[in-house]
Length: 252
Image (cartoon, rainbow, N blue to C red; front, side):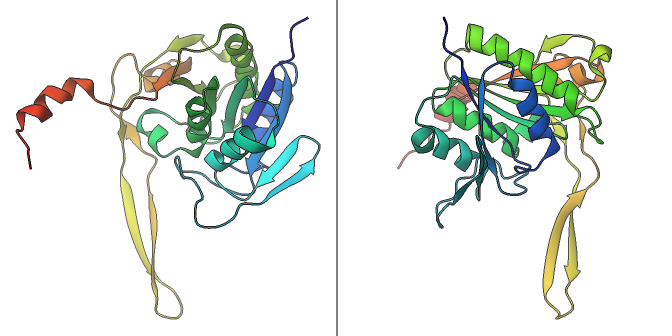
């Protein structure tokens, strides 16, 4: 009889986030689920690690652990020390909004899975690619099917998956496609304001970003109502640029 896979779940929206609870419920049929999630909102923290203050972990109910840190902190603490057993899978999500193209460099959701990959564990992040996040159950159902596939087949070394699901009823999805990262067209605005005591503060904001239309990308898949699965690699080296950098002739 095969061992029940241990699935470590995290997110970047906090332990109370509806997407996390829907995900855990869906994954319960795949394996034993344990949750280490941030105490509060950690969106857009990227792959940040808390180094300059202590971290506290509170078990809020059996299997549920609240960490006053980032998604990366959550996975690192769980795998390196607290679980007592190495998980077979790390899943991060469900994020109530897309993580497409260049979003992955900012995303705490993606970072949770990326840390799992760095620790040598098959990992994926799952996001619901819609502004209003109406169909979290759809993304959770897709994640459960993906979890089953990954626990059966594994993933290539040093690779994680970034999964984006259209914000539609499950029956309205038009299939699955393996994609590459697209490119965002960010229109961020810096808003400068003054508090009642004369101090200046700033908001980074702006309209919902667009993207560069290209074939084969995660953006195109979502527009076609398809689930996008983008393999992300640990090696960020631009190998094709090495000759050009060498031709610069830089030396000391």
